[in-house]
Length: 357
Image (cartoon, rainbow, N blue to C red; front, side, top):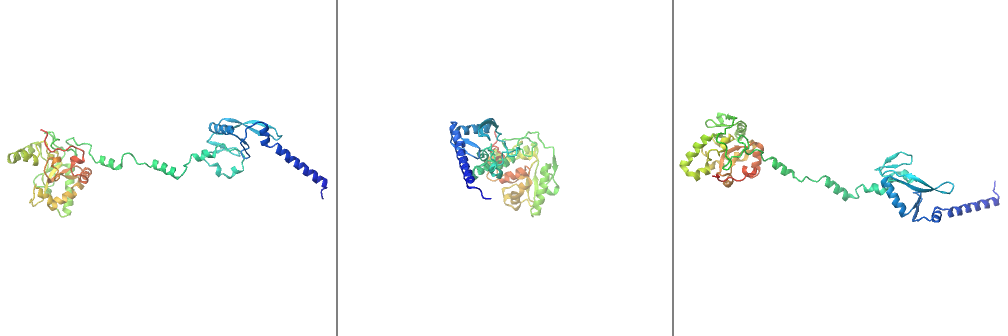
């Protein structure tokens, strides 16, 4: 059925009148009539924003306090209500339950349709994340920073014996500045097997086990070794020193033989090694033999070191003795062999070139 022309004209007029009234009663016009300071109007947020409102919003968001909010009722009048602002940890959702504020609300599709103002600003969420790859790299670098003490330094410290002084310690250092008590004698001396010695020879138990292993390894490589001197008591060392003193005088004797109480042989951890032929017994030429070279290359693998290396008299106090072996245990012997080859230096002790008296 076709509408009468006058009805259509009347409906159009009413429509135009409503639009004009709506424009006149728009929020901007109403706000101006109320004397409010206006910067902009944000339909999504449901109201006006101004510098004062921004400060109030920031304060409420950070403290969780209530703030006043103006809203228009259905009858066109303005009403003032209080709304509680959630804490930054939780934000109200459309359906009522709270949600974790660490979830980025900008990524949620429903937020584009939900007119409820976001109580946790997006800027706060993003500010807690790394701003760029550089910041992330700096954070990772800080977390993985190396300790102030280098691992190599710690390993070196572990290879310095704790006990260099006790007479019965396997790492005791005896030299011209560090004598033993005259009455000291080890309580764990054992006899070495006859096939490994010339005459009866004794060393401490741990040194004896290492000696047998070392001699067996040398034999497997075609090198024959034997022990010609080992433990000496204080009294026995006194007789040897006096004998040399009569033959060579004080200076020469002190360079090649220890005074009683200053000999490593008294520890039960030192021994003099030779070959069965005896062609280089207790001479520096032993170092040039196949047996001498084998000991220089392998003795530390069994806990021994060549105690008086070549050209180290200013530290050890004794001339080169390639036949004189001292047991320290494998860990410390390897440490000495890897470094200077001189126990005093590698264990952090002062040189001992001369007797103190």
